[in-house]
Length: 295
Image 1 (spheres, one colour):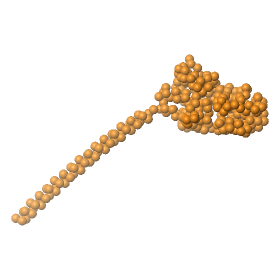
Image 2 (image 1 turned 180 degrees about the horizontal axis):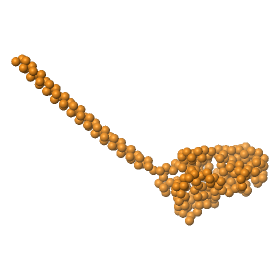
Image 3 (image 1 turned 90 degrees about the vertical axis):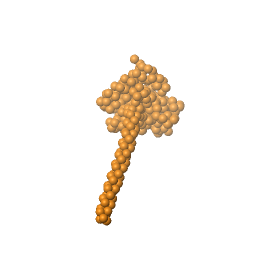
Image 4 (image 1 turned 180 degrees about the vertical axis):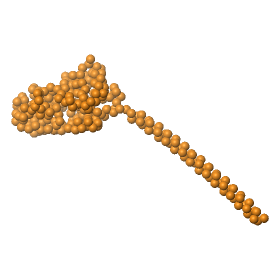
């Protein structure tokens, strides 16, 4: 009797354990399933956030490389903001296209590397196209420029011939430097050979300081920049009547980037037609130099 009772008790205990085991496994499965559901909801939410961020980040950027010390085309104003005729014109293009303008100050010596590496979309900053047509894809010209000589009013220098034996300053990698080093037709190497020295500077602000201090006798410079510098610095300087040459400014793109160039060309003409170009030219006092006119 005791043996039978022991067997029945053992069977009952096995059954209870079996039921408990099944119950525990079911709860764990439900918990795992619940965790999976919560994880899926979380993943879906993250995906939605990522998609939203992606949508917000789809706006095309247009990166302009410019010399930050080249007024009135590109420079830092009194509020610490980059501005200038070229940068405001680029901003107007971006507004038309729905692009975000990225203003990237560059070392002018490194402009080709910046462009060819893709870190900038274009060079837009009083960029001379003449003589560089084979190296870049250029927009339509929009400003007529000339290279001139600036001297102190009391220097006694009145003509280009008076530069014989003088120390002349110029910006490194500039059109003025290329002109003074060129032996081709229209080049001014013969004139430069008469100088005592041709000193190169990273920017014209520094060069003007040297001119004011008497370390330079003259500066070879774009006329628009010369006028801005003289107006902002007050009396004491003059531009020689004899010009070194005449040239044109255009937006420079990587060679072969015709599609982007065509887009900018079309927008520039629209901005000329609606009066934006003329308005900006008046603001920056280069109205007499702008060549891009309304059709």
